[in-house]
Every structure is written in C-alpha cells, then in structure tokens.
Length: 347
Ligand code: ADP
Image 1 (cartoon, rainbow, N blue to C red):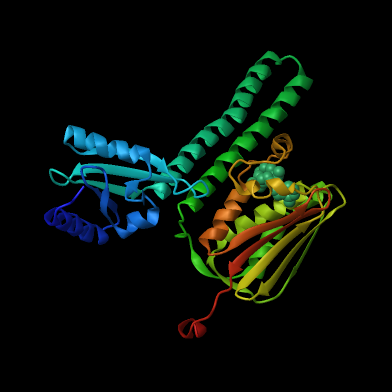
Image 2: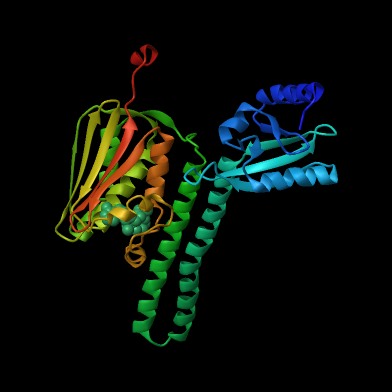
C-alpha cells in the first residue's frame, strides 16, 4: 500500500518522540506493514521484513484496530531460538485513522525480581513447616510419655534440636533478606581482612574440635578491604563451617588469604566429600542442598552459600568453587582490595 507523505510524517514524529523515552515503539499502517520503528524496537528484533515477528503482538494490534481503543498485554518474547526470553509489557493504540502505534517495555528484570521474591516466600514457608510440625508432634509425644523418664529425655532432646534448627533458619532468613536488599547501611569501614578471618576461624574452633577436624589459617598481613565487617565475617564463617561439616573426622580445613591483582582472595580448602561438578553452580541458590538429609542432620539450612554469594556481590566481589567428589572442595571469596586515596592516606 502507498502511505501518504502526511502519514509518514506523523509516524516519523512519533518515533522521534519515542527515541527520548525508555519505551520501544513500532508504527504499523493499515495493512500491518511496519512503516517506522524506534531504535530500541530495532535492537529487540520485533520486526522482520516490515512485519511484526511475534503473533501475540500482531493480535494485540489487530484488536486495538478492531475495537478502536487502546489494548495492552504481557508476553514472553525471544528474538530467536537461542536468545534469552524477555518479558514484555505491550500496548497498542490508534495513532490516526490509519496508523497503530505499538509501545513495548522490557520488564524482564522486574519480572525476575518479582518471581524470585515469590519463590523465596514459598521456599521459606516450606522450610519452616518441617521443624514447626516436628515441634508440634514432639510436644504431643512428650505429653504421652509423662511416665516414662527415658522417653521424656529423648523427646526433650529432639525438641531442643528442632527448635534450635528453627531458630537458626529464622536468623539466616533475616540475614539473607537484609543482604538481598543490597543494604550495606550496616557499618561500612576499612577492614583488615586478616583480623576478620581470624574471628571467623575462632568462631568455628569448637565445631572443628567436636568434628575432629584440624583447622589452620595462614594469611598475608595487612590486606585491607572496604565493607560491612559483620557481613564479611558471616560469609567467611559460613564457608569454614561448611568445610568442617562436609568433612570426615581427622581431616583438615585450611583457610588462606592472599592478594591477586586488585583482589583479596580468601580460600577455604577442605578434603571432605566434595561436590558433583553438575551441582556446583546450584549450591549458591537458596535452599539448594546436594544431599538434603545430610544437610538437615547437620543443622544446615541451605542458606549459607546464598548468604556468601550475596555478601560477595554486595561488595563488588565474587565467590567461586573448585571441587571434586571424594577429594574435597576449595571455596574462594574475592573482594576488591581497598585502595587508599590521598585523602584517606592520612586518616
Ligand atoms: P547448608 O546449610 O545445607 O550447608 P549451604 O548453602 O551452606 O547450605 O550449602 C549448600 C549445599 O552445598 C550443602 O547442602 C552441601 O550439599 C553443599 N556444600 C557446601 N559446602 C560444601 C563443602 N565444603 N563440601 C561439600 N559440600 C558442600
């Protein structure tokens, strides 16, 4: 179809306007031929050979035209089979008698956050249910066993174990939500990483003793980082705790600190059970455990490494793992080394 000069001008003006907004826009003539699109729309790959590539978007345009009103929809879109799916919010509106403008916003990130939050709440409810129902069953059992001292003792011990588990789960959930909000409002300061590690090692001495694991620590002195000391201690503590828990008696756990380029590297090495390669990425997800029953037995919550990962990210660092089943694991926490500025030098 031949589009008049005037119509083309309207389309060009609308697209010029869209270029300054965050929204992608496509303008279609009455035969659904795309006569103009914004650079964002072009980058998203919404149009090919002057037609919309996505049938849902086309249906939205048809509907707006048929009903002569503005229509909106949310949909998943991917440029091609290999491209990641995007979550789009689209709105089709008549721009003139002939033209329809399709406005598209990429909501992928917002949707991901919303889904993550939703999953988190579901996971939490599920994880909390287990100890809560165990506690309620044990309380019932206690009542039935009032005349049997042996049984009473056994149930009371289990009750204590379950309530402790519940307590640590709740504490970790609170810690994780604080970290996930990216909140470093805690006290940000310049920290001597060696001191922080020493504190995390100390906090695990009793656990190591009880497990019969030898804990050693060697550090390059004077390594400074900037951040929330409480968070970094918690992250390192979690790594050491795992190294002990997932090791056999008479094994060793070594903690080290060195500087590589711009990063301080804290390594926690064990020669314990190791982690299958195909699960090494997943262990940083909340509530993911390689062996759920072992983790529960040892009082694990499945949140320790998620906390480490978020603490690392919040500080501009990262955590990585190298592990082989039966040989052991090495976790490395990298944090940017603090660089003294002129101003900071004489503080
Ligand atoms: P958990 O509270 O279950 O230990 P984490 O988030 O700390 O939760 O760890 C997730 C899972 O990763 C654990 O359940 C365990 O299967 C595995 N894991 C973590 N650290 C180690 C390690 N040092 N050696 C072997 N497996 C480990």
